[in-house]
Length: 621
Image 1: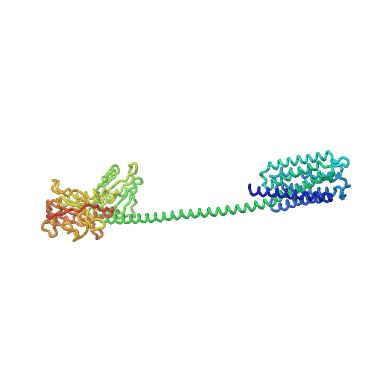
Image 2: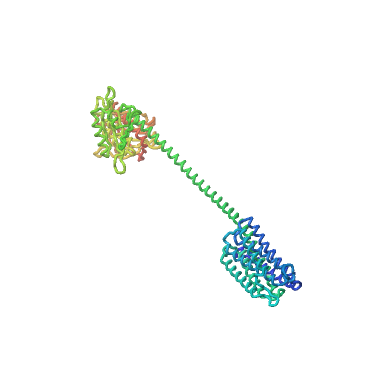
């Protein structure tokens, strides 16, 4: 049972016990002086009725009263006023009327009619609000009408000295009881509008009123037993109604107010905790996101730094090769030159309008058609293309070698063409060995293509470079190596095919010549130690000769070019010659290729390949 049920049960039980224990006192008082007993009970009921009226007025100042409370409160005042007249007119008082029992009985019936109707109507208006003035006016009209009917003799007689209660009185009491029963049914219908502490006292008041009216319909003597019980029940009924009204009008609204305040505080506290949790969660998300942003910024800065370094290396490589880069957007037709490319074409980089037509106008008219055919062929095919064309600048004729690679989309449509141009004018002039110069230029052009490819096959690049050097120097065998990562070790990356007849046991694979600088030996190590290129046409008599590896073919001539990058040793190119002696121009021919190869290693950050040490045996070389 809820706390309201417990409170209701306690209230009803206490009221019933007080009533039962008061009955002997009232009975003794009625036997001693019934007129005093009657006045006491009636005036007590009047005081309670008027108290209900004043409770209604006080509650109206705090909150809006429902129609139920307004009608009950106003009607209680008028019922109590009629009961005062009934008390003053009672037999033996002789203050109002002739002292006969008919008038007080008529006033009793009038008060009970007013009380029954007000309770019934108030329950009908429990969910509505009514005007206080309207209720006062209606109660005044009804009370005035009843009193006027009594004074004017229109109201039927209710008690005769010869016969006692009249049939009208008994019928009126029965009708009043029926109205009270209907009121109880209405109260049950609107049960949800009342709490337990209001519902049960109000229901008990209606039941006691029915018992009260039943007792008054049975008495014969106005000082008799049923009249005594009826007045006792009236006091109990008025008190129960007062108890219900006090809780309905004052206690419950205050409890409801405090309960709402408490619920609001609880909701505020819960909202505060929820807000704190949300703030903490959001702060955690923001912290995590901030850390991610910091890491992302660091990653981007590192990538930007690498891009800048890569661009710097590419620029250095292009500068060393006297080459410029360009890019042609196939869709828009716009061409972009770097500064070196603009210099090669003899135009101002800032004044260049980016049109392919402007580029073609820089060429010798005789080479324009060849240049257009070169562009179309590059767009239609998937492999890289190369062309040479002439550019007239003032009184000179510049010869330019152009290489191009086409970038395609997912559907294999060309979207951009990237390329490199190299000024080869000085290499194209007549020299004692024109064929050799042309081969050197071709090797430089082939090697330069690796700079613009995002992921070139370095093994193929190194093998191709070695073959070009063998042709340039008329050598048969050789190798290209780089320093071992983290040490001074020298690692071979490419070997020519030595002795197809099977005389040499050193096969085409990568292996380590030495792990540190102190192990540099023989002719190849001597070149690294002195840090400059040299050659010998008599390796067996050379002071640095220590023989060749086991299974190696004999060496009759030897040439070595160390590879340097920013002053640091990064590798070596070594060649063996069988057809003629080496000369100084062989080293001069290899130097440009060696320098570009070093820049290529830096640009693509080629890692070294580890391998096994080779065994050595005393033999020439």
